[in-house]
Length: 456
Image (cartoon, rainbow, N blue to C red; front, side, top):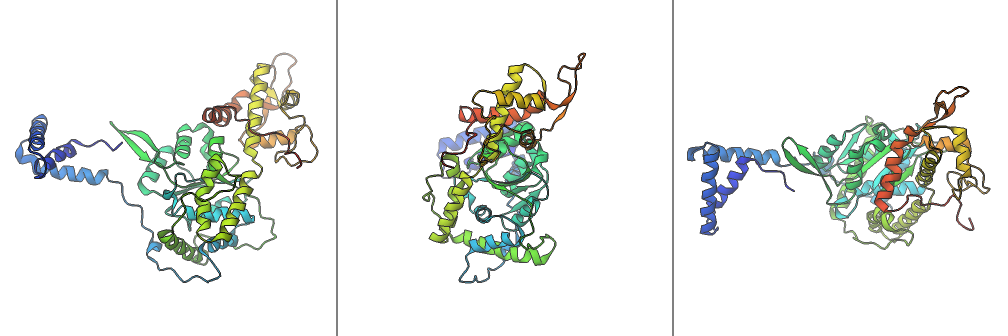
């Protein structure tokens, strides 16, 4: 829906039709009638028409979104590429210079960065999530490197939903959001709506602006860096890079946005991506591995098409990487299962608080839940064991849920405090991960087994 027109703009529409010699006479007569009615309604006369048309022109300018901010690199000429290199290999090499990742992650990061230059050719733009269990794993540096390679980068540490509407709608940028765990995404329904809906082309969000209602374009590439996990619907829309602290086995160059020795090589790679994007012809529906289904297929379709544009070898590498990502451990799935079962525990016991010891014992006793024969958070333990206190705390920490001192019997005589949890601590996570996931799929979000596949 277009933005509501001002009174002056509506008058200008009638005026243009009235002076249009190609219009039918009855249409011109009706336009003149509407003009006269407008002038009478607003206390104006014919001599006011030039001023009204000038106001309409000013309103047209104000309503038009500003062009995306210019990037001086877009005018720079591209340098010749070594015949043994491709633009994709240059982008992978740029990440290898500064980041310690595995080979599949370099490929995914490079393809995602390149897709920001052509994302509007496809139905979806997958989100990129850089996540780690602790700080100091290179997430911020990754976003800074990305900011030199993606199209129209907007790097921010914090943003409100309203600012997010305006930023995407007006600048059509690639949004890079650091410290995203501070956004409290589980309780921010408006923010979740933008991130989820803006994944798909053509989606808009309506907002009230004064007395008017306006629709904002929200289809744009977005990368997020955070400790922990996102709500399940958003996780499923993301390429997830699980960052780890560098163990020192590889020599990495320290990245500094103010150091031209760091930024100039990336600027040269950016120019190569720019020229590639201007002239490349991409397959709208490349052949995908059978392991990629539903949303995984949507996420990887534009990335694999990009890889195919550099030949069969790169296409094969990208498909192997995609399968690696979709078949790898997904901690968010087992965390959702844990959240659902913890809600069962609270409901069964009819309490608003519970010690960690009592919670763990009840989880072990849940029929067919699998917590008494647990194969580890990543599902790769060879011998099953009961879910351990440290494993329970580690999974809940991913959601920002920490143990607290609780009095199980609310301070009644003989009561003893212990480390545990309050039901209220879980409510935001249940809404974000369990309820939203069930609403979207129409079924339970419990989608994995706690056992490894047969023969593993």
